[in-house]
Length: 340
Image (cartoon, rainbow, N blue to C red; front, side, top):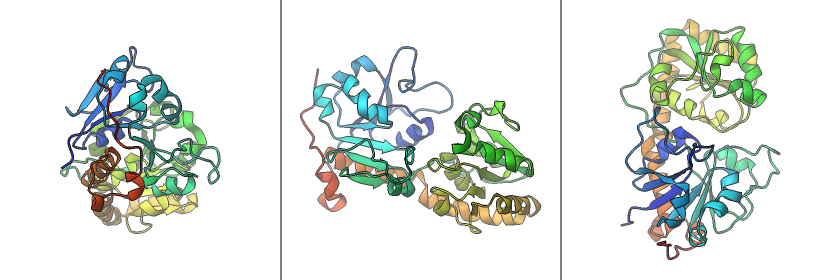
């Protein structure tokens, strides 16, 4: 049986780190004075961080006895590993989580992790399809959301909910114009960081309260053109909200059109569907019940934990031959770890 592993990663997306912390291993998160971006550690509020998640001063990282290093941004892979880790730690098994599709070119952009000795983990199959990952071994581990069983859709608010952080700043990529156009015809509320700067914005809802907050809305609308599948979409489905979304990226397959929600690239048709959901709550309930069933299997935290536990054990060299991918077994072997 594999031992409890010691894993270094950075705090990039709080919701994702909270989900990843459900694995049966210890995660170490570097922090710097002033908590600059990438080194914010574990901020108070928003999440109840588990005891297996540890803050560590960045200057103390070279002395940690680690098994696996997990990067989550391109800068961490290209620069921070070199600046932060000891030479021995840089030889440890290394995993990079790619949270987004390529920004420079949708099909021809080479991924900066160009390393046959690493593992590149994509969070959606769309992302894996669009990136040119070269010789780097890849794997898809879809999102997992820890939604309490007792939180269920009620839908009494005859409105749609949009959950996007910094909509005004991020513009067309996350559908700022789509939101504005649709809101002229459909009652919509917006929550997320910076949402109070946008018409219809209600401000930020604490992450641990978002599922219960969303459950009162008739549906979730996702206006995003081109980012990864949002955790808010997975969480809404798990609660039982029907999701209406622009039919791009992973939306096209994560949401069953007419089964768990509606997806389309024609905004007029999406607006018509939203109107139907507002007028017919029974139809919203049917779609939401299907969404909940799909999400509990596809985006359940138990499946997410199994996938990540197996991946981390394989990377560290502790997986059974019958339970591991030969491409991952060929990654850099576990080396003698620094004790200084």
